[in-house]
Image (cartoon, rainbow, N blue to C red; front, side, top):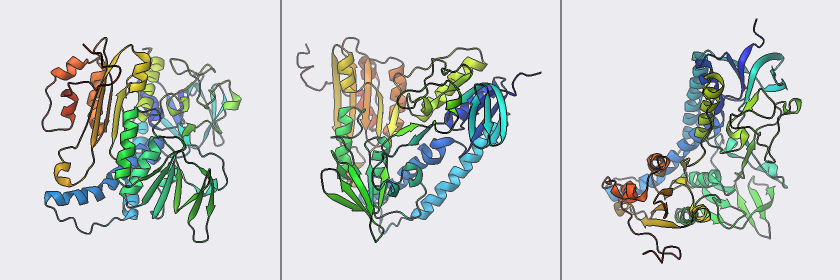
Length: 459
């Protein structure tokens, strides 16, 4: 007779939870899952997928305008928000079904409802309790709105995908990648778009060249940036518009305020008070190298452990978890040199160290940097530019960081990420033949380091 009903119970069926459930089942475990919102988690429903669809949509206005230089009559294009929103909803519904189908085909039992920990081996879903040898928490993260007068009038990225009407004016508050992406989305869809950030320059953890360049390009596209600025309160006016009062004086009027001021691990109301699961000050669940919490038998991965909040990271963590605990192949995560992209306009692609981090960690570096107008825009009429940057450890010649701002940066940086992970040197880049004419070839044709105090004495 089995001591437990299941070998593994997964709370949350986002990207990490689904992958852990599927792979563990394929490795022979009896697995169950529970979810009280939607199949696929944040990424599928209110994150990566719908956001990228909105980014595509927001580019078409520019595409129409730029087509004129290529001989196209692009007069009178019109945008219909409801069509975009409803088509997006249909695609997300299809993906919800795909995720449910993946669990079913793997033989995973799924419970609809909120799962709460009763003890280290028991989970309650609605009125039912089940026992499992191992419990995995994969509940992701949730948008955070600071407390201030009028906070009830704002939305987060969760609600941004389901608006009844597209506003004429929008203010996005925040300085991370979600705020920057939505500022571009709204502007591209025809909204008067403003971004408020309390610091001097957004995208704090990105390379300084990238941060400065993106600010410049967003301004050129018509996004109004307000740095060293924050809201003190928000008032709803008689005509339905919003008055955003600013710290230090002044105000802005708008039709929509979206807060993108961070995401916190989603640990509320999952029964943590019933077990000995410790968390960081941020709320992230503390786990060891194999994702076990401070309560034996309970594990966690993905955004809820607050290491790197990215979908592919959660999936990789899930693979490591499943191999370790159900395939008898202890596997740890390597968080170094994870390539990532920001789908602002133009896109950011980045992998490895920023220039500031490289200077802190290495004795000597060389920096190669190029800014240019892509071939496409010689006829399009656009003054959009592209930035490419390579950071090299001068002692070993190893490339330790690559950063790009420009069209298709995310696609290009994926290949560069493989090279960095493999330990490519600048000599490797230099000996690679470029594909002409492409933007990406610039990465293998930059020969002269940027002249700055660290490289002036180069012999």
